[in-house]
Image 1 (cartoon, rainbow, N blue to C red):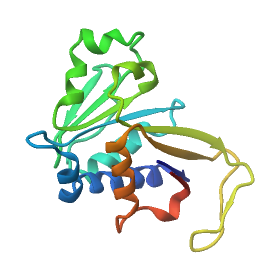
Image 2 (cartoon, rainbow, N blue to C red; image 1 turned 30 degrees about the vertical axis):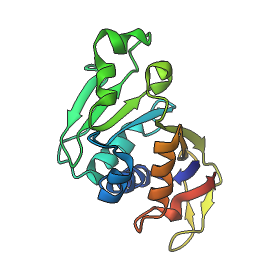
Image 3 (tube, one colour; image 1 turned 90 degrees about the horizontal axis):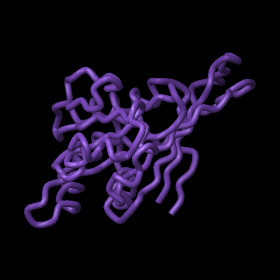
Image 4 (cartoon, rainbow, N blue to C red; image 1 turned 60 degrees about the vertical axis):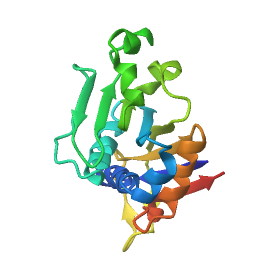
Length: 198
């Protein structure tokens, strides 16, 4: 399953993350995903342009998971951990030059712990990530001449503004169930959706 959103601002990008975070706290979703004594876990693999909004998305996700911790890019520490309804393990692989670094530092163990692993620059270590994960690709598109009539009135973006496309793709049955569940939630940001595909 795939979902594609259009974001006109950092606020939109954060709102998409926040909505997903709230869906992840749903007991119905967690019960459907956890087997026997296994606790709920999910890996989100974020890729995209530099400055596209990966950290803004993660900050929104943390708010949705009711974390009060300040979210920032963990570029110099590789991993930051935030407390919330589920723990959030926030990786930034921008400075990692090989996939073996995840194993070398023992970071791959977090993918099997209860909680949410958010991996920025995931394309640098795709083979080390769980196969059943939720991929999010964020791309910047120039918005010259773009007019949005979906709000209270026409919104004309300045020529230097840009829009983002956030494309979620499920990598297996667990992440597909999540996307399907999320799209049925009351606070799902349907006004920002561009496309939904099976």
